[in-house]
Length: 131
Image (cartoon, rainbow, N blue to C red; front, side):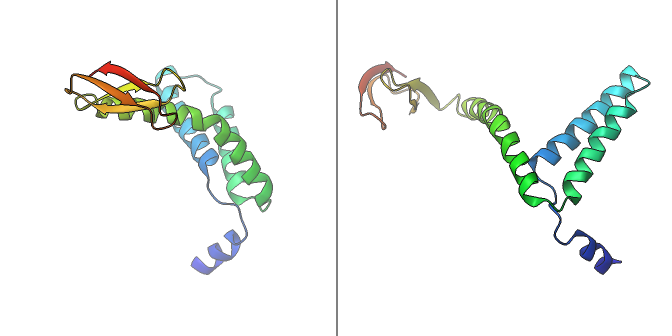
C-alpha cells in the first residue's frame, strides 16, 4: 500500500501555500454553513476541494509554482502587516516605534529613556524623540 502511494505521488506538485489557503477557506465556509444553512453551498465546497486536489496531484510543476508565486505576491503584504502588528503588540511594554522623517524607515527604541536623539540606520538622519 505504501509503495503504491509513493509511486502515485512521485513527480506530483504536492501541497503549497495556495493549496493550504484554499483548504482553510473550505473549512471556514463549512463551519459558517453550519450556522447559516445555505442549501447549495456544496457547489463551492466541491470547487474548492477539486481545485486543491488538482493542484496537489498535478504534474505540471512549473505552472503550479507560478500560480503559487502570484498568490504569494498578493498574500505577502497582508501577512507582513499582521506580523508587524503582532510584533508591535508583543513589544508594547518595552519598546517604542518611530518613523524616520527622511526615509520613513521604522525604528525601534527602548522605552523609558526620556528625550533621546535617534539615528536612522538606513539614511543616518538624526532626530529628537521622547520615549
